[in-house]
Length: 432
Image 1: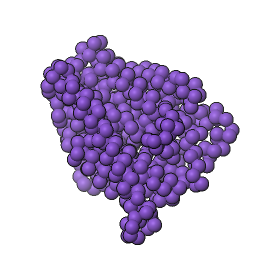
Image 2 (image 1 turned 30 degrees about the vertical axis):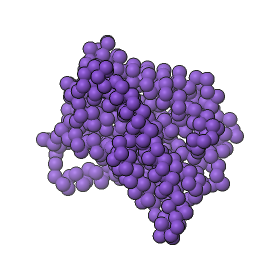
Image 3 (image 1 turned 120 degrees about the vertical axis):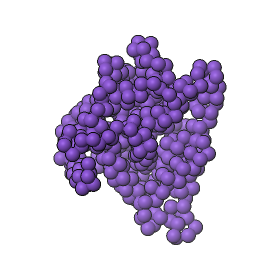
Image 4 (image 1 turned 30 degrees about the horizontal axis):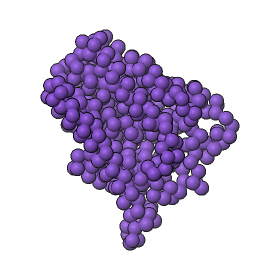
């Protein structure tokens, strides 16, 4: 494939990504569906002969491109959430109850269900089964934009997401579970390299499950607080980027926070999301949050475009060749059974979501870029045997999720909007 062909393809895809959202706003379609299709069609063109763009052939590129895309998306989600989370206020913890339930109940159950299905029923090696469960468990902040909050609201301090609980639940879950799936990915890596649980179990619980989570959240919260004070109340005018309106400050915040958290051993994904929340809390009503969110959103759109083209190209050039009936069972069970069931169960008893909203939140466990990152990361650290089949299964699950959730997102969110009390709809309308 020549350089001009690549420029033409990426340019056309970017043009589609720019104009498409408004064209399909009320249709049962999504931009990721179109971009994956464009990539697949490009992969079938004569100029693609001999071009190898499989994730397993370029593990480093795949890992880092997916890594950066998820990081940008996490900053965007954190800046978009209007609901505060002050660790010293019990009312804030209660307001985030849907997120805690989805993280503490639904995600571990999905990991366990996929792992047990793969190992006990389908005959997959335990480490590979656990990795599939961990990589496919987190909902995706990148591809779930159709069911997440749209952006920060700074007018009069109104927290308009209080009236749109399903979007808040899905957004907050997606912001947190990309980092919280990491301990289980490490468990799969340790299982594949260090043998039975007895040899590494205590270290995993103490360091990978607790230590790295605490460090990541602490680094992120501290970095976000310091960056927020600098941007809004810095001692020198040159430091107060909120006054100059420089939106690239958000990109700098991503890189600084992630690099620092990873250097000291914490989970960088959690750190970036925590930093975004702390930065958002610095001056909740300042228009600067909208400026930062806009530049992050555009960068996320560009990175997502490249990854979706990459995925579509790979699909039509052999990524799914290793798919078998076991792959279909895993993808179908996760999308149609495990996530909807465990998501719904985890939200039972909360008064923040109506019955149909609980069902919708449970169903929209969008799989995407995070799964690509975890597979690429783990494949370079452990020995999981049939890696081609695992990549094919992950690819099939992502494509199925893009199609199923892309078709159903717009009609479902419109249905939930119509079913919401009028007062709630009027408050939610202030977000638009």
